[in-house]
Length: 281
Image (cartoon, rainbow, N blue to C red; front, top):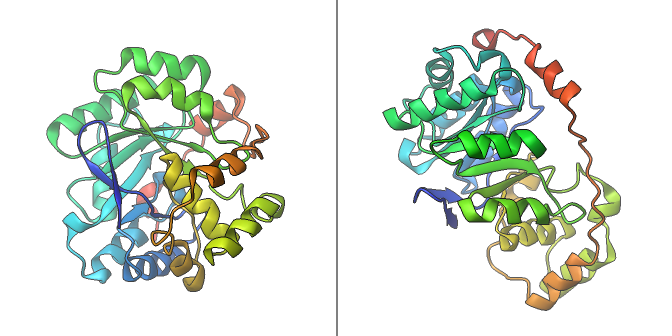
């Protein structure tokens, strides 16, 4: 699997599997399938309630720990919990996390970020991420961070390529990890004529063209699927390249359309959602 180099020298696979909205049993099977198909990046979170299942899949795969890149996210209710990162490690059954995010800019996120920085210095975390930050909170985080984040996870796809955000992140070398990489499965995006035409040109599906676009945009991409055929097909994007002309044609469909609208009230509601992460299956 090809990799990107992060701003601290850590290598991260360009493509991984996301486990958002997967029940534990489904997540475990999907991760096993993905690892068998050559994936090396697995994305989970406290809030997905499937970290234990992801850990079981990693153990079941028989692949060396150092050959698997694991990312997870701290939930806002544990930002002030000094045991939160150790608890995350225990649920995953590992002794370090390759990439750990703050899941939302809610609650005492400043304390949460300091906790991740501390774990980074201790070797428990190899790279630091932030997820869904925007506007004033995003600027404040970069001002206060002793260690600038290596990755920012946000919604990104051809309708919403996050061009302006990338310009903001460029001086820091922070790379985007795209969720909703296919526009939340929006058929109008996936079936855009430009993707159908390029699919015929390269003998690929429309989805594969979009995922290849992400890679060439410099995005780490984590499509989620529990369908073994889709998991396998999503990884089959490294035997061709889109031309500069192809990329320019795709750029024309930008609509500044996002499917998730962040708001302070929504983020604060996340901060109050208490869940018993250690009780997950």
